[in-house]
Length: 390
Ligand SMILES: Cc1ncc(COP(=O)(O)O)c(C=O)c1O
Image (tube, rainbow, N blue to C red; front, top):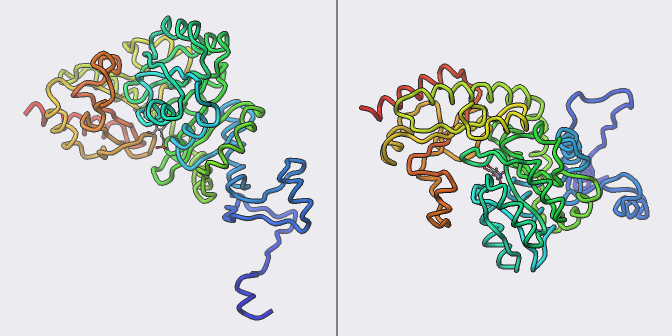
């Protein structure tokens, strides 16, 4: 073999069968070959195990898919390059022109945009209610044939809690599917409910370190399999290196989620007692309007603490810019604490009535509590609140 060929056809290193790496390798290959065409064709038809092209399947991505499906208590999973890719490819795969989607004012902004503006362009209609309007949800499902209900709990950013059993029961009775964005609650929550499909942003708690993006669709094997060709053709593939980083993050998922949730509850309780804070929203607080429901539905309550400051939007700016341990940026679920000021969260596509349902005010601040010592975070919040008072 000449050197120009040798650099392309590199040596294979075979592992002895009794010798394995403790950390699974990253299959950073787009293509997978077999010696016989018929065997590749059989693998593509699903008649035997095997891989062919990473946009369709890849062993590292598959490892992540099986892990996440098992954690969420379902059979199968499709991973994607971001959380919104999971949402958009899932909804595109399930809907056609003329279908109706029931979704909510409190739904995460880009998901709402996708349903209202983008699916709307292709003739998919929607109704927008409040996630707490249980009677309205049941009425809408009785009155109008509906393809699916798309909802979150707790909602981003004001942590409203959905009555999941009631929504799933009403949807099942009406022949509608349920798709739940379970990003805030995580993979270990809500699996006991009759939800057809869970979607997640892996960018948050799964990766945990703010250095990789990803998404997942999780559900029963038959339903997920029926979507696989559509999602692979849309092409929002997760790179195997990103899948490896998410797999690594998942090893500390419970340690992080549990510790950061406990810290979030401590911070929420401290904020609630502060005179400069008008209202704190966290499902773990006994004063949360649906705390009892959240307690029945969830093991723990997540790391997002949202609150309204006394004062004006300018006071909120002074407070947020005075924080030293919280980065002023998007996202949540990282080991670093983050803060979203009201300036980035004002809804632009709402009627005045929907603004009031959204719970967002000109002083609403969202915190994502990281893995720092909660005493340090509270001291930082205290000094920043004192700057507003001054
Ligand atoms: C509830 C929820 N769903 C979906 C997403 C989108 O995820 P990604 O940023 O990974 O696309 C986010 C991001 O903040 C989110 O909070």
